[in-house]
Image 1 (cartoon, rainbow, N blue to C red):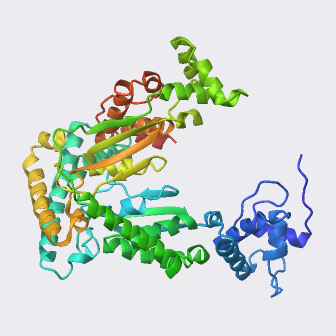
Image 2 (tube, helix red, strand yellow):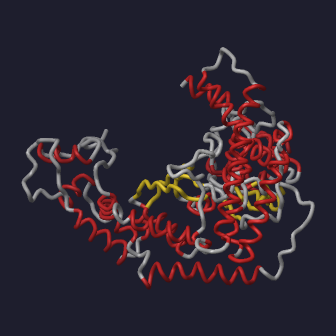
Image 3 (cartoon, one colour):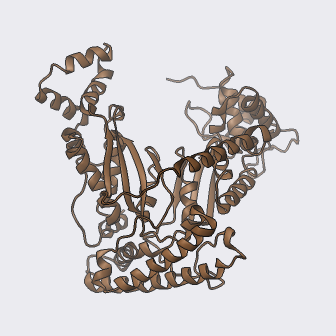
Amino acid sequence: MYTRENFTDEEISILDRYFTNVDKPVFVLINLPEVVKGALFARYSRSSKSLRRLFLDEFYSNTSNIFDGNIDKKIEFDSTRAEKLYDRVFSEYGDDSVAQLGAAHVACEQSSNVLTKILERGRLSSYLEQSTRYIFYDKKNEVGNYNYYIPEEIRGQKIYQKYINIIDKNFDDYSFIVRKLYDYFSDRYPKTDNDSELIYKSSIRAKACDGARGLLPACTKSNIGIFASGQAYERMILRMNSHHLEEVRNYAKMLLDELRKVIPSFLKRVDLEDRGVVWSNYFKSKRISMEKTAKITNQLPVDVPEVDLIDWDEEAEIKLIISALYPYLSVPEKQIRKIIMELSPGEKNKIIGDYIGDRSNRRHIPGRALETSFYRFDILSDYGSFRDLQRHRMLTIDWQNLTIDHGYRIPEVIYEINEQDRWEKVMIRSVELFSEIQSIYGDYVAQYAVPLGFRFRYIMQMNIREAFHVIELRTSRQGHPDYRRVCQEMHRLIRDKAGHKLIAKAIKYVDYKEYDLERLEAERKSKSR
């Protein structure tokens, strides 16, 4: 079916090192620096040659005559040429898409929970963050300290020792409660013969961590893995360079230093005065102006719901029907609309039903017709729930500063183990510390003192397709009870407030049940695999 390209035996020996095959039209590039991959694709778009032929003719170099058929010896290629070609395409032609062709895996460790959300802000990247539900955060580091971040802004200041004393006490109380919860749940849910010790202990640990995580301060250190393109890293660093917090700016510098070791050509603009510096200054000046403008009104409302649907498309179901039919017809959308408006409710329902199809699991989500309409939610949940929901990057999410203004919620299980007074003491100490830091260093630095159990306001706007994914995933039985509650309410609002009953019905894998050991079934499935 496909024309096989002719290569000499020597060329095949070379290509075998850098491509997964030499005789098929689909192949993967391997063992090549990111800049070479990016430059190859950049040149690819302007050449009639195949990629493998292009590589041999214009990139591969064997000037040292080191190739002798021994695969254990290093094969050299001209990365200098690749960098020059990349620079010409990227800088002279202005083709920013070339910066999407090289990528890197980066580990960011010992970052505060404030910083992790800033690192994860970019939409076009992949993130994996250390979880608060699988690890006891009371383990101390090699020098005997709890793992939390101390803001550079307060080092050497009067409040420095007070910050350490209060955060240490809060971690002591977290440790006491999480261990007590572990024992409590172990007694409440005895191990059965059906489950291994590993499955049982993992489920009990997750339950205990879920109950106690609200005590962890936002300065708690975490680890995060990132995979992103050069373009995504450039945008990330430019944003971080303009941030209030010194921790964020320090990480931006470290990111740039390390990424330049592997993809230097993709990040040349970041610190150029007339490029990246101007760009970061734009972000900074815009933020400062908006902060001044926002001070004109900031009166806190009372009696607000945890989740509120504040905007939606009134015609969402009509638009869904039109978009569902569009690829299967050959007439303009306006004509389809005219026909649809004359159909009976039953006929409209059938079209939606046919488009949704027989979904046998939550991963079976219909196509792009679901992207025609949206829902916008204003949410006031605990910060811990936000940390999980913020990772859905295909939606639009924005948030306010972490604060003590909206209060906190004590989980029911804390009353069950009679530790509500200890919980309250952590919150009272944190309020005192927050208020003192805020009065001296401002809102941004004060965030580090706030426990994850304090409520926090953010916006989530998503199209219907993303609503399927978010609501069904985040209400599944293994989810944390707090964000399950948020997403269950989203579904109710779509059905009852927006009145989109057909769409709500199609989101069939939303789970309203309550479970004892949320992680148990997931651990069993993992073990069986």
